Length: 523
Ligand SMILES: Nc1ncnc2c1ncn2[C@@H]1O[C@H](COP(=O)(O)OP(=O)(O)OP(=O)(O)O)[C@@H](O)[C@H]1O
Ligand SMILES: Cc1ncsc1CCO
Image (tube, rainbow, N blue to C red):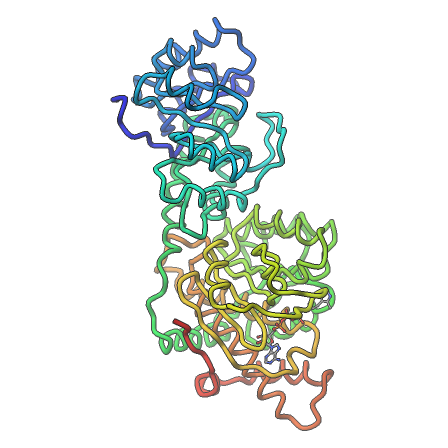
Protein backbone atom coordinates (compact mmCIF):
# COMPACT_ATOMS: atom_id res chain seq x y z
CA UNK A 1 0.00 0.00 0.00
CA UNK A 2 1.63 3.20 -1.23
CA UNK A 3 0.99 6.68 0.11
CA UNK A 4 -0.52 7.77 -3.21
CA UNK A 5 -2.71 4.69 -3.83
CA UNK A 6 -6.31 5.87 -4.19
CA UNK A 7 -8.46 5.02 -1.18
CA UNK A 8 -11.56 2.89 -1.56
CA UNK A 9 -14.04 4.68 0.70
CA UNK A 10 -16.92 2.25 0.22
CA UNK A 11 -16.99 0.80 3.75
CA UNK A 12 -15.43 3.21 6.21
CA UNK A 13 -15.28 1.90 9.78
CA UNK A 14 -15.19 4.43 12.61
CA UNK A 15 -14.15 2.78 15.85
CA UNK A 16 -15.86 3.19 19.21
CA UNK A 17 -14.57 0.94 21.96
CA UNK A 18 -17.51 1.75 24.25
CA UNK A 19 -19.85 -0.23 21.97
CA UNK A 20 -17.97 -3.53 21.83
CA UNK A 21 -20.19 -6.61 22.10
CA UNK A 22 -18.23 -9.46 23.68
CA UNK A 23 -15.16 -9.51 21.44
CA UNK A 24 -12.08 -7.44 22.26
CA UNK A 25 -11.38 -4.26 20.33
CA UNK A 26 -8.58 -5.80 18.27
CA UNK A 27 -10.58 -8.95 17.49
CA UNK A 28 -13.48 -6.77 16.39
CA UNK A 29 -11.22 -4.67 14.16
CA UNK A 30 -9.66 -7.71 12.56
CA UNK A 31 -13.03 -9.37 11.93
CA UNK A 32 -14.33 -6.15 10.39
CA UNK A 33 -11.30 -6.03 8.08
CA UNK A 34 -11.78 -9.64 7.05
CA UNK A 35 -15.45 -8.79 6.39
CA UNK A 36 -14.46 -6.12 3.89
CA UNK A 37 -13.95 -2.76 5.63
CA UNK A 38 -11.95 -0.60 3.20
CA UNK A 39 -10.75 2.22 5.47
CA UNK A 40 -10.56 2.61 9.25
CA UNK A 41 -10.77 5.73 11.36
CA UNK A 42 -9.68 5.55 14.98
CA UNK A 43 -11.87 7.78 17.09
CA UNK A 44 -10.88 7.98 20.74
CA UNK A 45 -12.73 10.90 22.22
CA UNK A 46 -12.21 9.92 25.88
CA UNK A 47 -8.68 8.48 25.89
CA UNK A 48 -5.55 10.22 27.09
CA UNK A 49 -2.61 10.55 24.72
CA UNK A 50 -0.73 7.44 25.85
CA UNK A 51 -3.78 5.21 25.52
CA UNK A 52 -4.78 6.71 22.15
CA UNK A 53 -1.23 6.18 20.88
CA UNK A 54 -1.22 2.55 21.93
CA UNK A 55 -4.60 1.86 20.34
CA UNK A 56 -3.47 3.62 17.17
CA UNK A 57 -0.22 1.62 16.99
CA UNK A 58 -2.00 -1.70 17.49
CA UNK A 59 -4.69 -0.77 14.97
CA UNK A 60 -2.08 0.31 12.43
CA UNK A 61 -0.31 -3.06 12.65
CA UNK A 62 -3.57 -4.93 11.95
CA UNK A 63 -4.68 -2.54 9.17
CA UNK A 64 -1.26 -2.91 7.50
CA UNK A 65 -1.70 -6.66 7.48
CA UNK A 66 -4.94 -6.27 5.53
CA UNK A 67 -3.57 -3.39 3.42
CA UNK A 68 -6.30 -1.07 4.64
CA UNK A 69 -5.52 2.62 5.23
CA UNK A 70 -5.79 4.03 8.74
CA UNK A 71 -7.06 7.50 9.53
CA UNK A 72 -6.83 9.21 12.91
CA UNK A 73 -9.62 11.37 14.23
CA UNK A 74 -8.54 14.89 15.12
CA UNK A 75 -5.01 14.20 16.53
CA UNK A 76 -2.32 15.07 14.02
CA UNK A 77 0.41 14.17 16.52
CA UNK A 78 -0.94 10.62 16.82
CA UNK A 79 -1.34 10.35 13.05
CA UNK A 80 2.30 11.37 12.62
CA UNK A 81 3.48 9.07 15.41
CA UNK A 82 1.90 5.95 13.85
CA UNK A 83 2.49 6.94 10.25
CA UNK A 84 -1.24 6.94 9.53
CA UNK A 85 -2.55 7.54 6.04
CA UNK A 86 -4.41 10.64 7.14
CA UNK A 87 -6.48 12.59 9.63
CA UNK A 88 -10.15 13.31 9.98
CA UNK A 89 -11.04 16.77 11.25
CA UNK A 90 -14.17 18.29 12.73
CA UNK A 91 -15.34 21.80 11.96
CA UNK A 92 -13.77 23.12 15.16
CA UNK A 93 -10.50 21.13 14.88
CA UNK A 94 -7.25 22.25 13.21
CA UNK A 95 -7.93 24.06 9.88
CA UNK A 96 -7.21 21.94 6.79
CA UNK A 97 -4.42 24.20 5.44
CA UNK A 98 -2.52 23.97 8.75
CA UNK A 99 -3.05 20.20 8.97
CA UNK A 100 -1.82 19.90 5.37
CA UNK A 101 1.47 21.60 6.31
CA UNK A 102 1.98 19.35 9.32
CA UNK A 103 1.14 16.04 7.65
CA UNK A 104 3.48 14.34 5.14
CA UNK A 105 2.85 14.97 1.48
CA UNK A 106 0.17 12.71 0.03
CA UNK A 107 -1.69 12.36 3.35
CA UNK A 108 -5.45 12.16 3.27
CA UNK A 109 -7.36 14.90 5.04
CA UNK A 110 -11.08 14.59 5.60
CA UNK A 111 -13.55 16.85 7.31
CA UNK A 112 -17.04 16.47 8.77
CA UNK A 113 -19.68 18.64 7.10
CA UNK A 114 -23.26 19.25 8.13
CA UNK A 115 -24.31 21.83 5.53
CA UNK A 116 -23.74 22.87 1.92
CA UNK A 117 -21.72 25.87 3.19
CA UNK A 118 -19.38 23.58 5.07
CA UNK A 119 -19.00 21.38 1.97
CA UNK A 120 -18.15 24.47 -0.12
CA UNK A 121 -15.54 25.53 2.44
CA UNK A 122 -14.08 22.00 2.48
CA UNK A 123 -13.85 22.22 -1.29
CA UNK A 124 -12.03 25.58 -1.14
CA UNK A 125 -9.64 24.17 1.48
CA UNK A 126 -8.95 21.19 -0.81
CA UNK A 127 -10.06 18.43 1.55
CA UNK A 128 -9.57 14.93 0.15
CA UNK A 129 -12.92 13.74 1.37
CA UNK A 130 -15.92 14.93 3.36
CA UNK A 131 -17.92 13.06 5.99
CA UNK A 132 -21.53 14.14 5.51
CA UNK A 133 -23.81 13.83 8.48
CA UNK A 134 -25.30 13.12 10.72
CA UNK A 135 -27.74 11.36 8.41
CA UNK A 136 -29.90 9.95 11.20
CA UNK A 137 -29.97 10.35 14.93
CA UNK A 138 -27.34 8.14 16.51
CA UNK A 139 -26.42 6.86 19.93
CA UNK A 140 -22.71 6.91 19.20
CA UNK A 141 -22.30 10.66 19.12
CA UNK A 142 -24.12 13.34 21.08
CA UNK A 143 -25.66 15.31 18.26
CA UNK A 144 -25.37 19.08 18.43
CA UNK A 145 -27.00 19.60 15.03
CA UNK A 146 -30.26 18.35 13.54
CA UNK A 147 -29.82 15.15 11.45
CA UNK A 148 -29.79 16.00 7.75
CA UNK A 149 -31.67 12.92 6.56
CA UNK A 150 -30.95 11.13 3.31
CA UNK A 151 -32.71 13.80 1.29
CA UNK A 152 -30.44 16.51 2.67
CA UNK A 153 -27.38 14.75 1.27
CA UNK A 154 -28.10 15.28 -2.44
CA UNK A 155 -27.52 19.05 -2.33
CA UNK A 156 -24.28 18.52 -0.42
CA UNK A 157 -23.09 16.01 -3.03
CA UNK A 158 -24.07 18.42 -5.78
CA UNK A 159 -21.77 21.01 -4.20
CA UNK A 160 -18.91 18.58 -4.98
CA UNK A 161 -19.75 18.29 -8.69
CA UNK A 162 -16.66 18.64 -10.85
CA UNK A 163 -14.25 18.06 -7.95
CA UNK A 164 -12.24 14.99 -7.03
CA UNK A 165 -13.35 15.18 -3.40
CA UNK A 166 -14.83 11.93 -2.14
CA UNK A 167 -17.90 11.80 0.05
CA UNK A 168 -18.96 9.37 2.74
CA UNK A 169 -22.17 9.61 4.75
CA UNK A 170 -22.13 9.07 8.50
CA UNK A 171 -24.63 8.82 11.32
CA UNK A 172 -26.96 5.95 12.15
CA UNK A 173 -26.06 3.94 9.03
CA UNK A 174 -26.94 0.24 9.17
CA UNK A 175 -27.37 -2.54 6.65
CA UNK A 176 -31.13 -2.10 7.10
CA UNK A 177 -31.21 1.55 6.02
CA UNK A 178 -28.35 1.47 3.53
CA UNK A 179 -30.54 0.94 0.46
CA UNK A 180 -32.60 3.99 1.32
CA UNK A 181 -29.44 5.98 1.96
CA UNK A 182 -27.81 5.20 -1.36
CA UNK A 183 -30.90 5.91 -3.45
CA UNK A 184 -32.21 8.84 -1.46
CA UNK A 185 -28.92 10.71 -1.28
CA UNK A 186 -28.22 10.68 -5.02
CA UNK A 187 -28.18 14.26 -6.33
CA UNK A 188 -30.25 15.28 -9.34
CA UNK A 189 -26.91 15.85 -11.07
CA UNK A 190 -26.22 12.12 -10.56
CA UNK A 191 -23.61 12.54 -7.86
CA UNK A 192 -23.69 9.56 -5.48
CA UNK A 193 -21.86 8.67 -2.28
CA UNK A 194 -18.40 7.12 -2.50
CA UNK A 195 -18.91 5.29 0.73
CA UNK A 196 -20.61 4.94 4.05
CA UNK A 197 -19.11 5.37 7.49
CA UNK A 198 -20.42 2.87 9.99
CA UNK A 199 -19.89 2.60 13.73
CA UNK A 200 -22.30 0.52 15.83
CA UNK A 201 -23.62 -1.75 13.07
CA UNK A 202 -20.12 -3.27 12.95
CA UNK A 203 -18.54 -2.51 16.33
CA UNK A 204 -21.55 -3.58 18.40
CA UNK A 205 -22.42 -6.57 16.18
CA UNK A 206 -22.11 -10.05 17.69
CA UNK A 207 -20.37 -11.05 14.44
CA UNK A 208 -18.48 -8.00 13.08
CA UNK A 209 -17.19 -9.95 10.07
CA UNK A 210 -20.69 -10.89 8.94
CA UNK A 211 -21.92 -7.35 9.64
CA UNK A 212 -19.15 -5.87 7.47
CA UNK A 213 -19.78 -8.40 4.69
CA UNK A 214 -23.48 -7.55 4.62
CA UNK A 215 -22.82 -3.80 4.60
CA UNK A 216 -20.26 -4.12 1.82
CA UNK A 217 -22.37 -6.32 -0.44
CA UNK A 218 -25.44 -4.15 0.18
CA UNK A 219 -23.46 -1.00 -0.64
CA UNK A 220 -22.15 -2.47 -3.89
CA UNK A 221 -25.57 -3.81 -4.96
CA UNK A 222 -27.40 -0.59 -4.08
CA UNK A 223 -24.88 1.60 -5.84
CA UNK A 224 -25.21 -0.51 -8.95
CA UNK A 225 -29.00 -0.31 -8.71
CA UNK A 226 -28.89 3.46 -8.14
CA UNK A 227 -26.69 3.87 -11.20
CA UNK A 228 -29.15 1.82 -13.22
CA UNK A 229 -31.72 4.56 -12.61
CA UNK A 230 -29.76 6.69 -15.04
CA UNK A 231 -30.64 4.23 -17.79
CA UNK A 232 -33.81 5.37 -19.40
CA UNK A 233 -36.13 3.08 -21.30
CA UNK A 234 -35.37 3.23 -24.99
CA UNK A 235 -38.82 2.25 -26.14
CA UNK A 236 -40.65 4.48 -28.56
CA UNK A 237 -43.89 6.21 -27.64
CA UNK A 238 -45.88 3.48 -29.46
CA UNK A 239 -43.98 0.69 -27.73
CA UNK A 240 -44.66 2.35 -24.38
CA UNK A 241 -48.35 2.50 -25.25
CA UNK A 242 -48.21 -1.23 -26.11
CA UNK A 243 -46.58 -1.91 -22.76
CA UNK A 244 -49.14 0.19 -20.91
CA UNK A 245 -51.88 -1.90 -22.51
CA UNK A 246 -50.08 -5.16 -21.69
CA UNK A 247 -49.90 -3.98 -18.08
CA UNK A 248 -53.62 -3.08 -18.15
CA UNK A 249 -54.42 -6.62 -19.28
CA UNK A 250 -51.88 -7.95 -16.77
CA UNK A 251 -53.79 -6.40 -13.85
CA UNK A 252 -56.95 -8.18 -15.03
CA UNK A 253 -55.31 -11.58 -15.33
CA UNK A 254 -52.91 -11.41 -12.38
CA UNK A 255 -55.36 -9.80 -9.91
CA UNK A 256 -52.59 -8.44 -7.67
CA UNK A 257 -53.39 -7.50 -4.09
CA UNK A 258 -52.93 -3.75 -3.67
CA UNK A 259 -52.21 -2.65 -0.15
CA UNK A 260 -53.44 0.90 0.40
CA UNK A 261 -52.88 3.16 3.35
CA UNK A 262 -55.10 5.97 2.25
CA UNK A 263 -57.31 8.74 3.54
CA UNK A 264 -60.75 8.28 5.06
CA UNK A 265 -62.43 10.53 2.45
CA UNK A 266 -61.68 8.28 -0.52
CA UNK A 267 -61.09 4.87 1.03
CA UNK A 268 -64.27 3.30 -0.38
CA UNK A 269 -64.05 4.71 -3.90
CA UNK A 270 -60.34 3.81 -4.05
CA UNK A 271 -61.11 0.22 -3.05
CA UNK A 272 -63.87 0.07 -5.69
CA UNK A 273 -61.76 1.47 -8.50
CA UNK A 274 -59.05 -1.05 -7.62
CA UNK A 275 -61.62 -3.83 -8.03
CA UNK A 276 -62.80 -2.28 -11.30
CA UNK A 277 -59.24 -2.47 -12.63
CA UNK A 278 -59.13 -6.18 -11.84
CA UNK A 279 -56.89 -5.92 -8.78
CA UNK A 280 -57.76 -6.71 -5.18
CA UNK A 281 -57.58 -3.93 -2.57
CA UNK A 282 -56.65 -4.29 1.07
CA UNK A 283 -56.98 -1.07 3.04
CA UNK A 284 -54.87 -1.61 6.16
CA UNK A 285 -53.04 0.78 8.44
CA UNK A 286 -51.75 -1.16 11.47
CA UNK A 287 -47.93 -1.11 11.78
CA UNK A 288 -48.06 -4.63 13.22
CA UNK A 289 -49.17 -6.17 9.91
CA UNK A 290 -46.95 -4.23 7.48
CA UNK A 291 -44.34 -6.95 7.20
CA UNK A 292 -46.92 -9.65 6.33
CA UNK A 293 -48.80 -7.38 3.93
CA UNK A 294 -45.63 -6.47 2.05
CA UNK A 295 -45.10 -10.15 1.27
CA UNK A 296 -48.72 -10.72 0.31
CA UNK A 297 -49.36 -7.69 -1.87
CA UNK A 298 -48.15 -6.64 -5.28
CA UNK A 299 -47.72 -2.97 -4.43
CA UNK A 300 -48.32 -0.41 -1.71
CA UNK A 301 -50.00 2.98 -2.00
CA UNK A 302 -49.32 5.54 0.72
CA UNK A 303 -51.67 8.54 0.62
CA UNK A 304 -51.35 11.11 3.40
CA UNK A 305 -54.74 12.81 2.84
CA UNK A 306 -56.09 12.51 6.38
CA UNK A 307 -52.94 12.18 8.38
CA UNK A 308 -52.72 11.66 12.12
CA UNK A 309 -49.66 11.42 14.31
CA UNK A 310 -50.46 7.71 14.75
CA UNK A 311 -50.32 7.21 10.97
CA UNK A 312 -46.55 7.65 10.87
CA UNK A 313 -45.49 4.27 12.19
CA UNK A 314 -47.67 2.29 9.77
CA UNK A 315 -46.58 4.37 6.79
CA UNK A 316 -42.93 4.20 7.79
CA UNK A 317 -43.04 0.44 8.27
CA UNK A 318 -45.22 -0.08 5.19
CA UNK A 319 -42.71 1.60 2.88
CA UNK A 320 -39.78 -0.02 4.61
CA UNK A 321 -41.15 -3.55 4.25
CA UNK A 322 -42.36 -2.74 0.74
CA UNK A 323 -38.79 -1.85 -0.25
CA UNK A 324 -37.44 -4.92 1.55
CA UNK A 325 -39.90 -7.19 -0.28
CA UNK A 326 -39.04 -5.41 -3.55
CA UNK A 327 -42.62 -4.30 -4.11
CA UNK A 328 -43.36 -0.95 -5.75
CA UNK A 329 -44.34 1.80 -3.33
CA UNK A 330 -46.42 4.71 -4.63
CA UNK A 331 -46.52 7.93 -2.64
CA UNK A 332 -49.40 10.39 -2.94
CA UNK A 333 -48.42 13.38 -0.76
CA UNK A 334 -51.97 14.79 -0.62
CA UNK A 335 -52.09 18.39 0.61
CA UNK A 336 -48.46 18.29 1.72
CA UNK A 337 -48.27 22.08 1.53
CA UNK A 338 -51.23 22.59 3.85
CA UNK A 339 -49.30 22.29 7.11
CA UNK A 340 -45.83 21.93 8.58
CA UNK A 341 -47.05 18.67 10.09
CA UNK A 342 -47.59 17.19 6.62
CA UNK A 343 -44.30 18.55 5.31
CA UNK A 344 -42.16 17.13 8.08
CA UNK A 345 -44.14 13.87 7.96
CA UNK A 346 -43.44 13.37 4.25
CA UNK A 347 -39.82 14.29 4.78
CA UNK A 348 -39.61 11.67 7.50
CA UNK A 349 -41.21 9.05 5.23
CA UNK A 350 -38.86 9.82 2.36
CA UNK A 351 -35.94 9.48 4.72
CA UNK A 352 -37.13 5.98 5.58
CA UNK A 353 -37.91 4.41 2.21
CA UNK A 354 -37.67 4.74 -1.54
CA UNK A 355 -40.86 5.36 -3.49
CA UNK A 356 -41.16 3.91 -6.99
CA UNK A 357 -43.59 6.60 -8.11
CA UNK A 358 -44.58 9.91 -6.56
CA UNK A 359 -47.79 11.37 -7.89
CA UNK A 360 -49.24 14.71 -6.98
CA UNK A 361 -50.78 17.89 -8.31
CA UNK A 362 -48.66 20.97 -8.98
CA UNK A 363 -49.07 22.42 -5.48
CA UNK A 364 -48.06 19.14 -3.82
CA UNK A 365 -45.06 18.42 -6.00
CA UNK A 366 -43.85 22.03 -5.72
CA UNK A 367 -43.67 21.62 -1.95
CA UNK A 368 -41.74 18.36 -2.31
CA UNK A 369 -39.28 20.04 -4.65
CA UNK A 370 -38.91 23.05 -2.34
CA UNK A 371 -40.28 25.31 -5.08
CA UNK A 372 -42.61 28.26 -4.48
CA UNK A 373 -43.73 28.35 -8.11
CA UNK A 374 -46.98 26.37 -7.95
CA UNK A 375 -49.57 27.31 -5.36
CA UNK A 376 -52.05 25.17 -3.47
CA UNK A 377 -54.94 25.59 -1.08
CA UNK A 378 -55.59 22.60 1.20
CA UNK A 379 -55.61 19.49 -0.98
CA UNK A 380 -56.25 21.39 -4.24
CA UNK A 381 -53.73 22.91 -6.59
CA UNK A 382 -54.50 26.46 -7.68
CA UNK A 383 -51.74 27.14 -10.24
CA UNK A 384 -49.25 25.19 -12.29
CA UNK A 385 -45.65 25.49 -13.43
CA UNK A 386 -44.28 27.68 -16.21
CA UNK A 387 -42.10 24.78 -17.32
CA UNK A 388 -43.69 21.51 -16.09
CA UNK A 389 -41.45 19.45 -18.38
CA UNK A 390 -38.17 20.48 -16.74
CA UNK A 391 -39.84 20.41 -13.35
CA UNK A 392 -40.88 16.74 -13.53
CA UNK A 393 -37.58 15.72 -15.05
CA UNK A 394 -35.58 17.41 -12.30
CA UNK A 395 -37.77 16.07 -9.52
CA UNK A 396 -37.59 12.52 -10.92
CA UNK A 397 -33.80 12.81 -10.91
CA UNK A 398 -33.76 14.18 -7.39
CA UNK A 399 -36.13 11.59 -5.91
CA UNK A 400 -34.85 8.82 -8.18
CA UNK A 401 -38.30 7.59 -9.05
CA UNK A 402 -41.06 8.15 -11.58
CA UNK A 403 -42.81 11.49 -11.12
CA UNK A 404 -46.44 11.92 -12.15
CA UNK A 405 -47.63 15.53 -12.11
CA UNK A 406 -51.42 15.68 -12.46
CA UNK A 407 -53.59 18.47 -13.81
CA UNK A 408 -55.51 19.17 -17.00
CA UNK A 409 -52.45 17.75 -18.76
CA UNK A 410 -50.58 15.05 -16.84
CA UNK A 411 -46.78 14.92 -17.08
CA UNK A 412 -44.80 11.76 -16.39
CA UNK A 413 -41.01 11.49 -16.22
CA UNK A 414 -38.35 8.96 -15.33
CA UNK A 415 -35.74 11.71 -15.05
CA UNK A 416 -34.70 11.48 -18.69
CA UNK A 417 -37.85 11.45 -20.76
CA UNK A 418 -41.11 13.32 -20.27
CA UNK A 419 -44.54 12.31 -21.56
CA UNK A 420 -47.54 14.61 -21.67
CA UNK A 421 -51.00 13.03 -21.47
CA UNK A 422 -53.96 15.09 -22.52
CA UNK A 423 -56.93 12.82 -21.89
CA UNK A 424 -59.44 13.54 -19.15
CA UNK A 425 -62.58 15.52 -18.43
CA UNK A 426 -63.18 18.65 -16.31
CA UNK A 427 -65.54 16.59 -14.12
CA UNK A 428 -62.43 14.87 -12.71
CA UNK A 429 -61.43 18.22 -11.27
CA UNK A 430 -64.90 18.71 -9.75
CA UNK A 431 -65.14 15.51 -7.69
CA UNK A 432 -63.10 14.76 -4.61
CA UNK A 433 -60.51 12.04 -4.79
CA UNK A 434 -59.84 11.78 -8.53
CA UNK A 435 -56.13 12.12 -7.79
CA UNK A 436 -56.44 9.58 -4.98
CA UNK A 437 -58.19 7.09 -7.28
CA UNK A 438 -55.43 7.66 -9.80
CA UNK A 439 -52.95 6.69 -7.03
CA UNK A 440 -54.77 3.35 -6.68
CA UNK A 441 -54.57 2.87 -10.47
CA UNK A 442 -50.83 3.64 -10.47
CA UNK A 443 -50.17 1.20 -7.62
CA UNK A 444 -52.21 -1.53 -9.36
CA UNK A 445 -50.37 -1.03 -12.66
CA UNK A 446 -46.97 -0.95 -10.95
CA UNK A 447 -47.81 -4.24 -9.22
CA UNK A 448 -48.59 -5.88 -12.56
CA UNK A 449 -45.52 -4.34 -14.21
CA UNK A 450 -43.36 -5.67 -11.39
CA UNK A 451 -44.78 -9.18 -11.69
CA UNK A 452 -44.47 -9.13 -15.49
CA UNK A 453 -40.73 -8.42 -15.43
CA UNK A 454 -39.88 -10.36 -12.30
CA UNK A 455 -37.77 -12.96 -14.02
CA UNK A 456 -35.85 -10.47 -16.10
CA UNK A 457 -34.54 -7.66 -13.97
CA UNK A 458 -32.90 -8.67 -10.72
CA UNK A 459 -30.93 -5.50 -10.16
CA UNK A 460 -32.54 -2.19 -9.45
CA UNK A 461 -35.73 -3.74 -8.15
CA UNK A 462 -35.92 -1.11 -5.43
CA UNK A 463 -37.20 1.54 -7.76
CA UNK A 464 -37.06 0.05 -11.21
CA UNK A 465 -38.07 -3.58 -10.93
CA UNK A 466 -40.95 -3.10 -13.25
CA UNK A 467 -41.53 -0.74 -16.07
CA UNK A 468 -43.10 1.88 -13.84
CA UNK A 469 -42.93 4.56 -16.52
CA UNK A 470 -45.30 2.57 -18.75
CA UNK A 471 -47.33 1.57 -15.68
CA UNK A 472 -47.90 5.21 -14.70
CA UNK A 473 -48.79 6.11 -18.29
CA UNK A 474 -51.25 3.18 -18.47
CA UNK A 475 -52.84 4.15 -15.15
CA UNK A 476 -53.45 7.74 -16.24
CA UNK A 477 -54.84 6.63 -19.60
CA UNK A 478 -57.23 4.19 -17.95
CA UNK A 479 -58.70 6.73 -15.55
CA UNK A 480 -58.80 9.68 -17.91
CA UNK A 481 -60.19 7.80 -20.94
CA UNK A 482 -62.81 6.22 -18.68
CA UNK A 483 -63.69 9.74 -17.48
CA UNK A 484 -64.23 10.88 -21.08
CA UNK A 485 -66.57 7.94 -21.68
CA UNK A 486 -68.40 8.50 -18.38
CA UNK A 487 -68.92 12.17 -19.18
CA UNK A 488 -70.84 11.31 -22.36
CA UNK A 489 -73.58 9.63 -20.32
CA UNK A 490 -76.92 11.41 -20.13
CA UNK A 491 -77.67 13.51 -17.02
CA UNK A 492 -74.24 12.94 -15.52
CA UNK A 493 -73.52 15.01 -12.41
CA UNK A 494 -70.87 15.13 -9.71
CA UNK A 495 -72.48 12.36 -7.65
CA UNK A 496 -73.27 9.94 -10.47
CA UNK A 497 -69.94 10.62 -12.19
CA UNK A 498 -67.95 8.75 -9.55
CA UNK A 499 -70.05 5.58 -9.93
CA UNK A 500 -70.17 5.73 -13.72
CA UNK A 501 -66.43 6.39 -13.85
CA UNK A 502 -65.80 3.20 -11.87
CA UNK A 503 -68.13 1.28 -14.24
CA UNK A 504 -66.29 2.66 -17.28
CA UNK A 505 -62.92 1.66 -15.82
CA UNK A 506 -64.19 -1.91 -15.41
CA UNK A 507 -65.58 -1.99 -18.96
CA UNK A 508 -62.67 -0.24 -20.68
CA UNK A 509 -61.26 -2.15 -23.64
CA UNK A 510 -57.58 -2.12 -24.64
CA UNK A 511 -58.51 -1.09 -28.22
CA UNK A 512 -60.40 1.93 -26.84
CA UNK A 513 -57.33 3.01 -24.90
CA UNK A 514 -55.17 2.65 -28.00
CA UNK A 515 -57.66 4.61 -30.12
CA UNK A 516 -58.28 7.47 -27.72
CA UNK A 517 -54.86 7.84 -26.04
CA UNK A 518 -53.43 11.35 -26.28
CA UNK A 519 -49.85 10.64 -25.26
CA UNK A 520 -46.88 12.51 -26.62
CA UNK A 521 -43.26 12.55 -25.71
CA UNK A 522 -41.88 16.04 -25.14
CA UNK A 523 -38.33 16.33 -26.42
N1 LIG B 1 -59.88 19.88 -15.94
C1 LIG B 1 -59.46 18.67 -16.19
N2 LIG B 1 -59.49 18.17 -17.45
C2 LIG B 1 -59.07 16.96 -17.71
N3 LIG B 1 -58.57 16.11 -16.79
C3 LIG B 1 -58.50 16.52 -15.54
C4 LIG B 1 -58.94 17.83 -15.15
N4 LIG B 1 -58.75 17.95 -13.82
C5 LIG B 1 -58.19 16.80 -13.38
N5 LIG B 1 -58.06 15.94 -14.41
C6 LIG B 1 -57.50 14.58 -14.33
O1 LIG B 1 -57.82 14.01 -13.08
C7 LIG B 1 -56.75 13.21 -12.58
C8 LIG B 1 -56.48 13.68 -11.14
O2 LIG B 1 -55.79 14.91 -11.20
P1 LIG B 1 -55.95 16.11 -10.18
O3 LIG B 1 -54.87 17.05 -10.52
O4 LIG B 1 -57.35 16.61 -10.18
O5 LIG B 1 -55.66 15.39 -8.82
P2 LIG B 1 -55.77 15.93 -7.34
O6 LIG B 1 -55.77 17.42 -7.31
O7 LIG B 1 -54.75 15.23 -6.56
O8 LIG B 1 -57.21 15.36 -6.97
P3 LIG B 1 -57.85 15.06 -5.51
O9 LIG B 1 -57.14 15.90 -4.50
O10 LIG B 1 -59.28 15.41 -5.68
O11 LIG B 1 -57.65 13.61 -5.27
C9 LIG B 1 -55.58 13.43 -13.52
O12 LIG B 1 -55.36 12.31 -14.33
C10 LIG B 1 -55.98 14.60 -14.40
O13 LIG B 1 -55.56 14.45 -15.72
C1 LIG C 1 -60.96 16.38 0.63
C2 LIG C 1 -59.83 15.66 1.24
N1 LIG C 1 -59.34 16.04 2.44
C3 LIG C 1 -58.34 15.27 2.85
S1 LIG C 1 -57.97 14.03 1.77
C4 LIG C 1 -59.19 14.53 0.71
C5 LIG C 1 -59.47 13.78 -0.53
C6 LIG C 1 -58.94 14.41 -1.76
O1 LIG C 1 -57.62 14.58 -1.79
